[in-house]
Amino acid sequence: HILKDKYILLRIYLLLLFLIICIYTHTCIYTYIVDKVKMAMAQKLTRSLLCGRSSSVGAQKYFVRALSSAGDMKLKAEKPPKIKHFKIYRWNPDTKEKPTMVDYPVDLNKCGPMVLDALIKIKNEQDSTLTFRRSCREGICGSCAMNIDGSNTLACLAHISDASKATKIYPLPHMHVVKDLVPDMSNFYDQYKSIKPWLQRNEANADGKETLQSIEDRRKLDGMYECILCACCSAACPSYWWNSEEYLGPAVLQQAFRWIDDSRDQKTEERLKQLDDTFKLYRCHTIMNCSKTCPKHLNPGKAIAKIKARVAQMH
Image (cartoon, rainbow, N blue to C red):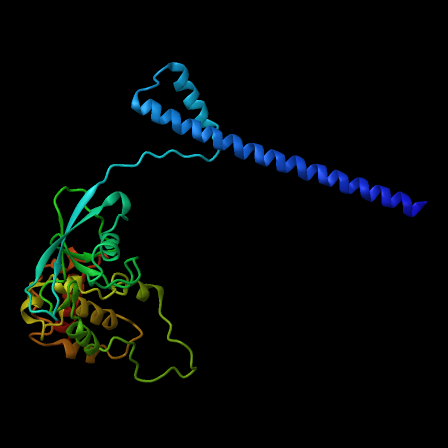
């Protein structure tokens, strides 16, 4: 008798479970059908109202009720195109054609807010041969440095202008061009290598531990270590334009002072002697284009002035 009672209870439980599933399924199907019907009616009323066929107050009220109760239904009016023109420097060394400026229209409603977004959209949708450097998209790598509307900056940090005139984009000025917006950075990196941009010590610590630094000494490096070597400042410096083979330029000199002013470095005198040169250092005439154009808001001109002061003290 006990086993028979358990069997009856099990059948009752299964029957109840089946009824619950049926009710839930029926509710879901009903809700889905109602939402579809309301959506269809709302779309039909929308077309009627826009065409002026039904302007009665009752129809408008029902239209509002249908919109408010249609679940996840979203009626988005498509925005009219917002066309922005970009004139981009194009040059291919594999052809014998001269450099040209090519115009590309971009709908800003379908594009990100930065110039780099527009360049990527143009490359993906209009001209796959467009060549430029980019990597992080966060103003960290310095790869997308270029001249935008007359100023050297990073394309990933440059907002697209709302002005109606076209945005003009060139590679960094006064540098050899590899292709399109890609400048040849070989000379720049060779100069950076020449200052030995690493910590130099006469001997390792006896205890084998790291070289510590006070909070005050660490603060001296602020405004210098943030440099990402994008070369925007060097490419904006007239002295670097005319003497790029010998003058180190603001970016490299700022990096040199970063190690000169580092309390942990023990080769300060050697570094200063290396820079004590008519062309390497003293081609700087404090024009300050470097500090004005830096996309990281650093002040290379100030660092160069401090190097000059340290060299003068050495004499």
